[in-house]
Length: 287
Image (cartoon, rainbow, N blue to C red):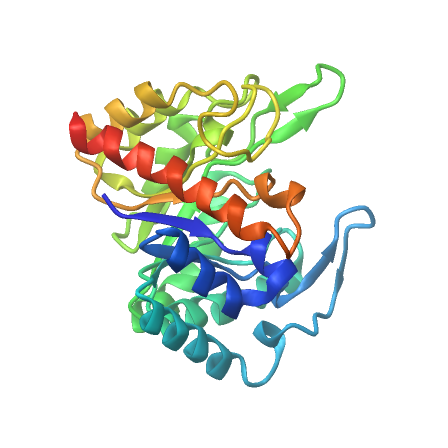
């Protein structure tokens, strides 16, 4: 079982180039090319703004090509990517094809594209069907992800697109194409109020499950913490993945974990993340 991790949380401190180098040194096999800096979004104001990151520049493919070269030299590769969001913003939607293009340039096989939280499977299918011909031309599969909303009155999450097994499979059925697959966010699936539990979701998705976002939480908030630090039962998660014959990577998305580190000691946090991912992989292999 190969292990991977998102790179955004470290890259915003030390840059993508150094992040890829250090994650290889920490022991990861692969990385999730996080392309959130491709365009900016002010969540407080609900407003798009232009980015100055190389992902947004005219030489974006050359930049990604260099990241791939650095990874190859260090013995690490891109297994998947994450496109910018929220897709409710039309300006961000205009960057989704660029994200797919960058995924192909990096050597990734899957690009995670969030659905619109509040749209039906048929409505979200329109976006995916628009992107699929471009994705196929670039040899990249698109992965839909289970989402959540927040109920302030109840102080817990609430239903959003793909939050339940029924909704997730309905989204995949609405497109009905092998190039649209499932990325199950384990933390989202375990949030009380919206999720149905990761094990149930894994069994329901079966062979459609091609990618993971793995992180820990208190079963209530979207904490994005290092596995084995909070409340998720990873024994059950790994056992269920084994039962369905999951063949993808174990990809961490514990992006909040590195917040307590700075550029001087961030490698210590990266090594801890690698150890948690290796523990998960070992649990899978020993079943």
